[in-house]
Length: 222
Image (cartoon, rainbow, N blue to C red):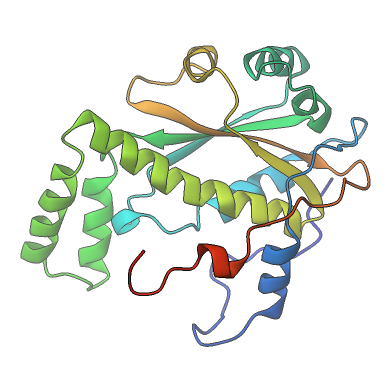
């Protein structure tokens, strides 16, 4: 399947401009399990999905994420096994492992970009970078940063897939250690989410109920 909409890295949209189609996409997006096993995701569309995912916000723009796409049939069989037999992964034709950084490896480059863009002077940029890097010092903090930020990118990917008429479903039900080993993740990278994505196979069951705003919105204090 090819992308049916033009790609722009920096669309001209004002911050105070309303985008009804974006709201519609958020409200109509859902996780699906009905894929067309005879249709494949082409490279152009795959790269567009990752480009959109990478536009997600992240702490100080460190962008602490990577994406591993699996499309080979034999490899997908292994991914299905690691995902405890979830066959829709194979039917989708593409599995994307969203990976988080546990170390601030992009900090030097990113804070140079902050300074070059005039957001900080050099001294302030160095101070803020040191504070940001210090936040990764403990193993738990590093994992938390990786998971939080990469999860934002995963949601962008899901919305991008929906906007392109694809079906996508996120999964946390898989063997994390086994998946990391199978896909040769470095020790400082962690699996965050597995996403099956591909052309739709048709209708999905009716959406399950969601909790009401009155139940989940707390004002001023819990």
